[in-house]
Picture 1 (tube, rainbow, N blue to C red):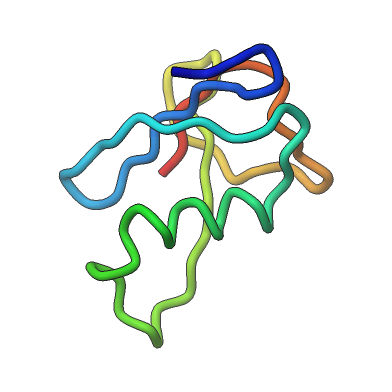
Picture 2: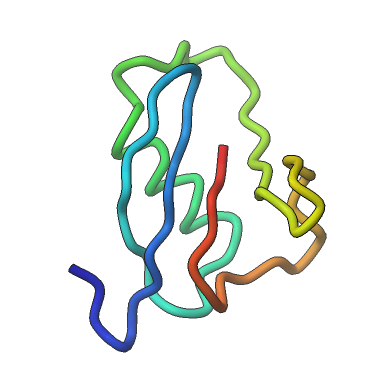
Length: 76
């Protein structure tokens, strides 16, 4: 369960989705490390990872430069 210093995040990879949480204000590196901690055993080490966030327009978009988590979000 997330506390006031953590934000709920839904990580999706392939057909799998797992809820998690990250500290408020987390950026790209923290999100990549969290994704790897959840799905690392399923990811090919030579694969280039790109994180995308589910947008208000109902589609996934690449994370903008300087992105930080400020509210619950869905990432893949």
